[in-house]
Amino acid sequence: MKKFGIVTGVISAGMTLCLCAGLALAVGNYSASTAFADDDTVSTWDGSTITTDWADDGTTEDGVTTYTLSSASDLAGLASKVNSGTSFSDCVVNLTVSVDLGNYAWTPIGTTSDPFSGTFNGEGYTISNLYCIKATSSYIGLFGYVHDALIEDVAISNVNLYGRSGVGSIVGWADQAGETGSSTISGCSVTGTITITGNYCVGGILGCGQRSSVKSCSVSGTDKSSCYVRGVYYNDGLEGDNVGGVIGFLGVTQNTGLISEISGNSASNITVSGTRKVGGILGYTDVMGTDSGRLNISGSSVSSCTVALVYVDDYTDNYEDRLFVGAVLGEGLFSLTISDSTITDVEVGYINPACVYGGDDDSVENAGYYGGSRSDSTVITLTDCTGSATLYDVTAD
Image (tube, rainbow, N blue to C red; front, side, top):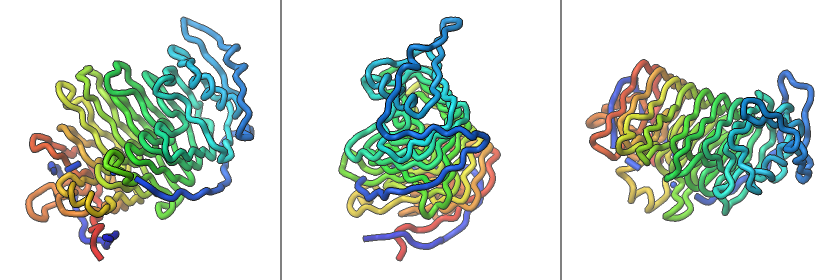
């Protein structure tokens, strides 16, 4: 079995393009104390109590109904209401207290049949000790599935997640192929002890998004040796790929004309790993057709992180020309620009030079910012980016 190796080189910034394309694991329980800044009131959940009377006390102004969650059981009640068919479309739900979920088993808010479709404003309050381990389930996170929604100003401290497809601290899955809406996640953060694992589309903030935007969000662990976002190979359909420190996958494939935005996001003190399509900010994007060029990545910051591919025997050998990895972007299957971004103290682990090398021979012109694309027509450009990654051969003894 091949394993992680040593640092083999340091690269400098520029612009280029490349060519490329992953889960079973053990997840340990953990406990952690949480400090709630600027808030002396913390509502602690007992793992079972659900209250929904707040849904009878909404206030309506200019056609928009606003609801208030003032306890941990109210937050659990939101999951109950949404998952029973109340979408909260055209409504605003405000959180007005910090919540400690106590590492009790959390039921994500929203499913594919009953998504959350309103605005959720965390008001900057902290939701701590989010725990959701569902090895055979998809859409795992605080929110499981959202459609045409806005999730803003949510702060999560200490998170332990494990699922199949669409795993992310804030949202597991946003919108779906064939739908017409778009969702935005803005001003959200994840800090503390971070362990997030899935078999496909895994991200620190968002697992998978169609026509979605992620803006001004951050993922910051306590120590990259123990804090991670990882994709683990499970079988041919769940390959441990599309893994990002902030977003696992984001794409627009229906020629809707909608523009997705990835801006002002950061990752620090975490390890991001998977079989292919692995990035410190975004694992993979495949905007196609007339939507090509409707997504760019700007204002990214990646620091004190390891972003690496994981060797999986014959699987890795079969995909050797699609094993892309980068400090910001793993793979982009269309032309895009990465701008106004910086990487500091970042290691990028590759399996063969084509995973990260943008030029001929051993010329590395992209500073480790991105892995590249399988499409020869794809051009990925760096503009006003600073810093460079240290590259190392994952398979070296």
